Length: 126
Image (tube, rainbow, N blue to C red; front, side):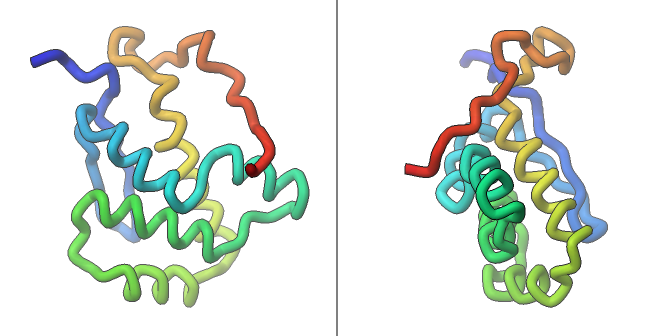
């Protein structure tokens, strides 16, 4: 069995810590990107100056689902949208973008960003 090229991804949300094992990071990225991609975030900021809270909430719910959080999608979305102050949305967006950029990190570089992985290209939404 080969070692994963990804480091474990750790984050905290609503006071609870989560860890995604390195060998599960790519699968988690696929789940999150079904709801929101880094390119879409760039487009929303460039064209509309904000990312819709519903898109952030759905992507965060996908990430928490992947982590096998016990709450339901409906409960997560309702809690997020009820607390939809800008700081909560930005906190979620920071976690999501950090997770989606995980591929730029390599365990062999001790968490340093690989030069060829930067900068992230922000494209148009197809």
